[in-house]
Amino acid sequence: MLQKISLLVLIFFSISFCQIDTTKGNVIFIHPDGTGLADWNALRILKVGPDGELNWDKMKSIGLYQGHIRNRVTASSNAGATIHAYGVKADVDDFGKIDNEVPVSRSGKRLSIMKEAMQQGIYTGLINSGSIEEPGTAVFVSSNSKRANYNEIAKDVIQSGVDLIFCGGEDFLLPEGTKGRHSQNGRRTDGLNLVDWAESNGYKIVYTKEELFNTSSDEKKILGIFAARSTFNDRTEEELKEKGLPNFNPAAPTVAEMTKFALEFLSRKGQFFLVVEEEGTDNFGNRNNANGKLEALSNADEAIGFALKFIEQNPNTLLVTASDSEAGGLEVVGYEIDNLTENNPLPERDANGSPIDGREGTGTLPFISAPDKNGNRFPLGISWSCYGDVTGGVVARAHGLHSEKMNGKIDNTDIYRFLYLGLFGKWLE
Image 1: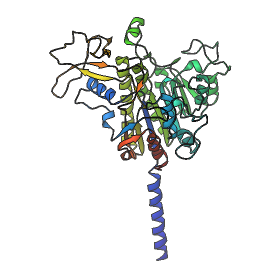
Image 2: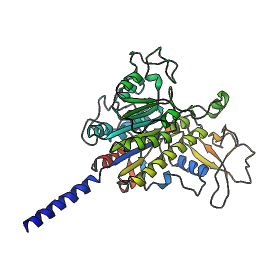
Image 3: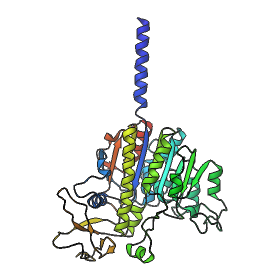
Image 4: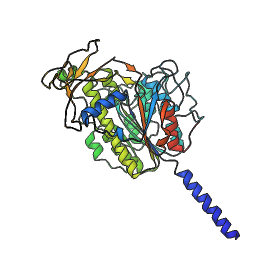
């Protein structure tokens, strides 16, 4: 009898332990910077039609994101990133510091969530289509008094110990007078060659899409340096046309291609935490380049698609996506088929003065939607409210492990709570 009781107790504790253990898992945070609901609606209409479904649409849960910060109703990129990385409110100029010191995070530790994960032996990755010092990823491992201290921030990221780092920004990794694969002249004044440092500390270095595709997922650590600054050319449509430049550098992998590799790479090692930022959605939006912003958003949606496929095979994974503000205040303007054909350009401005973009910039031929369920295609334009960042329609989404927790109105500090729950199995009150 005693043996049976002991056996039952052992089974109970074994089952309980397994249940606790399954509440922890992998976490993927995809941050299409500067995007809101109107951006996703525009992409859906153009890419799959008004009745179609993006990868973003397939995510299970929705959170109506409240993005105010401590001293303003609209976040800056660095303040928003600080809030996501620490789970506490920050000021507009904060970059991983609040009141000039590394803050105590929502978990009670003076650590970002990524640094706490690293202390727990969780594998980590940072991906940015922009430069290495961009706050949406850099703040997770760097704290600085000024966002403009690019060299210091780049050093923090490279020497953080993160297992996978994909980004641009070779300028800030090389000393002055040093030419790189993309950089014509390094910008570091301390004489430090961070590429050499990374290689000597076990990182496999890759510079192009082709090199990445030919790299084994079994490398110990990997650093992808894909541009001197950003992998995109964040100028207006008119400037890009004049200079003969594409929106994105075709030799660099897209954020989706980087994400696909990262998921294969990190999942081979164990539990992981991956933070991905598409920066082009923000920079093109701030330039009022509709063509560039929508291409960047399509890349981000493709990255979400790879994450969703990964979760199908690895259900112990949480995917969270959110921005912190909206760049340019994009809105869709629709026109009747009879009144505006594909051969007639859009008006340059709306009656209230807001510029209207077509496919090649202001006052050009309209975008044409993908077919709706009845096969109809519609002309449309993109109207802009500003050049800066605004607050109004940011929507967070979640899918996979614990995604049911995202429901209704959420604060920007709650992003940290979702990430923490996925990584550590604890819902912070």
